[in-house]
Amino acid sequence: MTDAEPDIISSLPGHIIDHILSHLSIKEAVRTSVLSTKWRYKWATLPNLVFDSQCISETSEDLLDIKSKLSRIIDHVLLLHSGPIRKFKLSHRELIGVTDIDRWTLHLTRRPVKEFVLEIWKGQRYKIPTCLFSCQGLHHLELFNCWLKPPSTFQGFRNLKSLDLQHVTLAQDAFENLISSCPLLERLTLMNFDGFNHLNIRSPNLQFFDIGGKFDDISFENTSQLAVVSIGLYVNFESNQSRLHGRSSNLVEFLIRLPRIQRLEIQSYFLKYLAMGVVPVKLPTPCIDLSYLSIRINFNDSKEISAALCLLRNSPNLRELEILARPEEQPVPIAHHAYCWEEVCLSWPVMRVQHVRIDGISGIKPELDFVNFLLQYSPVLEKMAVKPALNAGPELVKDLLRFRRASARAEVTYLD
Image (cartoon, rainbow, N blue to C red; front, side):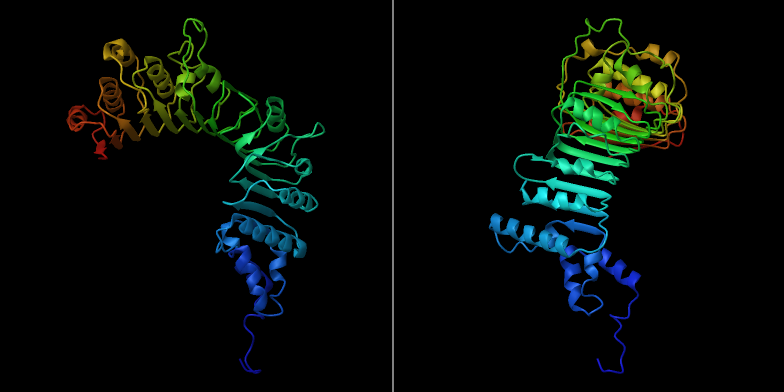
């Protein structure tokens, strides 16, 4: 480049440089400091700091060497960083809970951090330092493989809108206090947790709730804004129906607290939990906003079938339905689980469902009866996709083809 030619790199507007740097990893952003004087410390004002596998070259197989390099990089970036830090994410496959994280977290608490993401992929659960609970500016908090023990003075995150906790340990009272003390919380994700078994969710602005784990019970209070819910109960259990005789089902208690539910996913054994007690034909209040429903069901359990039918009957605006058979359930004598479909059909309302997906069926009678029922009482059905289990025989296709359809436009697709 001659003196007469302009330095295009140096003459780029500041917002263009910021946009370019925002698409680079920390490692690549730091390297841009050699482009020109204007670029030299531009990376030091990056608002989003992400330290993951892209920020270090794993040329060495020595894990201690990798950890040492990662620590030096983070120290260097935090030392020279001169602008506000909006997001800090630390996620590396070789990362373990080292004491350096305490020091970095303390440094960040003195900055107006909006998003904090910490994923510890190896070793024991890392105890979150007390100083993190003083970050009242947090909008998003995401922790993986961590142990949370808030101080007695903790009064919640007043500005937190999104909380994602996976593989965490947290005491029962600490969990309830954490959720109820985040008044602006809109999204909550809980996966594979321990230390608490009773999920009491009190959150007036919560809109999205995704949970998967082992727990004894779940209840909602002051959650009228909750619209998207996905719940997976990862442990099977034997319900004592004689002890529950005459008691209202968990399904009623569950849905009465979710008046604005729009999307509902019932995974693993949660339908069995909802079916405990007396399953009603009609709910006190129908789920008028529910448009998408996904259910994992044991077709050999008549109580689960009743709970699923109760959901369908009381969802007048349902448009999409997904039914997944639990393949781990071993078939039992069909006569023991014969379901009385005649009583159901006598008073069944017209369903408005348009798209249905059925996954994992093998062709046993309870499954076929359920599919036949859906086809007969879905007059606006457009498409039904059926994906069989691995042990399904060729006769399943013949059974599906012979079923009558209430909708002349209904297309049944067999996903072999």
